[in-house]
Length: 274
Image 1 (cartoon, rainbow, N blue to C red):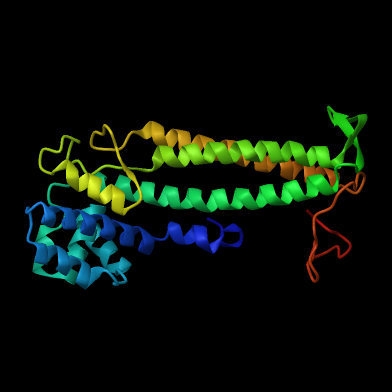
Image 2 (tube, one colour; image 1 turned 30 degrees about the vertical axis):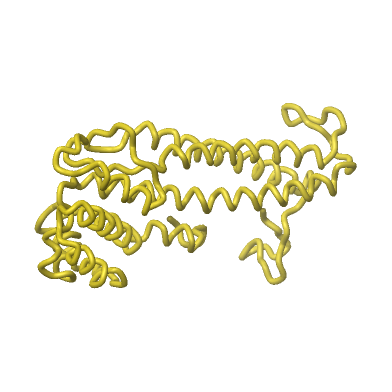
């Protein structure tokens, strides 16, 4: 992501440190469930939390281990063992790498969706406010880019409001689609791990158990999520291009806010670029 156009809250979700924190939480919550079921000692699960809960994982060290193992999750669990000590041997029992990777990705996607839903709410509030303000503001309607019949500027904004309302509904559905968890072992059969571990981890991570999984979570869930983001992006583009068109010197029916001190061009100080 380009830092200039990236919100810190969104960027932090995808930082390596965040990913490893989530991996740790998945492993630690699974250990808790295993301890309650009597599979591993309860003290071992407590030690895992006590020694690693507030740790800043050494990303360089994990990368170093991965260069040798050629395996990301093994590199992480090896580093975790360096932090936790002997009790780390009880971590990851009965689990497969995809249990960690896919569950983590779904935590990240749901967090990202929550940010985007909150953003859409702000857009909707702004559009609604301006639509009512300009419900009687006349402007020319266009078809094929050519003057047609009069409309109101408020009506244009109402179109956008309706479109983003639909976008919000789709994103909520897409969020639910990816908010699942799989802790079911090598091929999803629970052969070496109790299904109650999955239920415990899912609840702890704010997810739902995946009804049927193989080694990985179903990929159609991700297809819907990213397709929804694509539709939302097209809605953003449509509104943005409309504003850009209305701001053209030859049209100048509307204009973006320009803050004090903001510059539009390094060579042409008169410009107020969108």
